Structures are given as C-alpha cells and as structure tokens.
Amino acid sequence: MVIAVKAHRIAYMALPKAGCSTVKAALAQVDPEVALPETGTPDVMRWHRLYPTRRFRPHRWEAYDGWWRFCVVRDPLTRLLSLYTNRVVEMRELHNCRKILRGRVALPTDPDPDFFFQNLRAYIRAASTVKHHALPAWLFLGHDLGRYDRIYRTDELARLGADLAERTRCPVRIARENASATRLTLEDLAPRTRTALRDHLAEEYAYLAEFYENPFGQRQHLACTGPLRRVS
Image: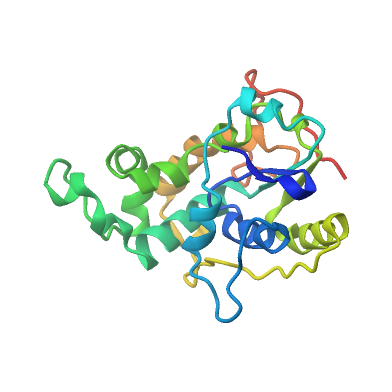
C-alpha cells in the first residue's frame, strides 16, 4: 500500500525500522484527512494504524505518477540491530509468538543477540514481527530506486521535515518516534555472529550501495536491481 497524502500529492513507501514511525507522524501533520488530538502525545501505533506499511507493488505505485514520491533508507546493519533492541528486547514481542509459546519451534523468547542473529532465519520463520522488520528493503521500496523523486537517509529526517513544510506550507515537527533506548554495535557481537550478519546483509548493502558503505568490506552488484540514484 502506498501511503498517500492526497491534498498535497505526496506518496511515500515505508521501510520498517527506517524512521517510518517518525515519517508517518510528520505526514499526519500535513494531511487534512487526519484529525490530530489537541492535547497529549498519540500512541506511536496510531501512525501505523493510519498509514499501514505494505510491500511494494509496481502497479499501485504507477497510479501516483506525477506525485512527489519519496522514501527513507537506513544502514542495513543498524536497521537489523534495531530490530533486536527494539522489538525483541524492549517490546518483548517474541513473548507473543504463538509458534514459540505452543512449542512448535524450540526457540527462546529472550535470546541474547548472538543467539538471535545466528538463528535469524529460524526466528523469521517463527515470528511474523521479526519477518516484517527483517525483510529486505527492496520488498518495500521496489527494485528500482530511480522511481523516487527524493530518497532520504534516516540521518536526514530534519531535511525531510523542512521539505514537507516547504511543499505543503504547513508547519512540520520532526520528533523521533519509537527509538530504541538500548544500544548494540557490531563490536558487541561474537565473530561467528558477525559472519552470519555479513552473509545475510551482503545483498542489502549491494542494493543500497549509493547510500551506505558495507562495514564487512563487501560490495556486490545485484542483477535484479534497477539503476540506483540519490536525488538531491
């Protein structure tokens, strides 16, 4: 599903764990079809109920030809580490995994990071929340990033807010939503875990080579991707 603000002809494709809560909150501020509460801070899940994240579908995207179309990307390793710290550690979402709770798969609900990433494929098969946040970026953004008028990195969200304000003539406040309080780095992980992550993320870094250097020192080309470009 394309997240669209019809009044301003803005179309956004969300990538999970790439600032999508923050971007959705910003779009709600300029979308006249959204009624914001006068007081208090809305629950972060409100933005996801308003603007659900769905996978990319070319025929749906083509319907927004002529609109201002953008997306936000994130360093693949940082995105995956955030999945663990936010969804597994802080939100404890594996405690709601039916396959684990019913004993259909023998996986702990509170894995340490080394166990989690060394068994990432098993967790993806077992838990829908892990699968949703660990799927490759191209499934949400499409093979060809040249379809977008503007691609922002997550460290450019302030710029996105300024661009939205200029385009819509509405005030936009960028407030970081759903940020992880726990920090995890590559250096915190065992050598075997780093190898597993290197192999898992090789294609992801190839896909986003225009935006991020591969910390594992690999730069591969994917034949399935279209031309990559970052539009200023």
